[in-house]
Amino acid sequence: MCDDAWLATVRVARDAGDVSSLFPPGIERLIDLPFTIQNAILAALGFLSFDELPEEERPPKSIWLDGEKMKAWWAEIKRLRKAKMEGHGDQASMSKNALTSKLLVGFDD
Image (cartoon, rainbow, N blue to C red; front, top):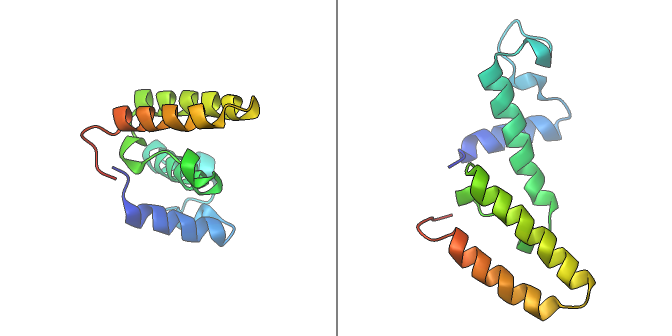
């Protein structure tokens, strides 16, 4: 599970317009960051971008770090969007509920 405090910290830095405030002392450029810090910042920015999606398309936090479940989630969202564009909205909603229940078995948000 992704830490809420870290997401909040990255959100504040992002909203201030510059994530360099997250860099350790002496580091001035993103390229100079240790990989683990760079990866944590980039992952958090990616997770925060989910807020820009319609609520029904946002993946549940419980699957964010599971590559296979995220891949399945985005494939289903793509399919649902296509179905909606083709005028099959009711069928799309029913399928999403089935997918959601399969993905979320054993997970809490």
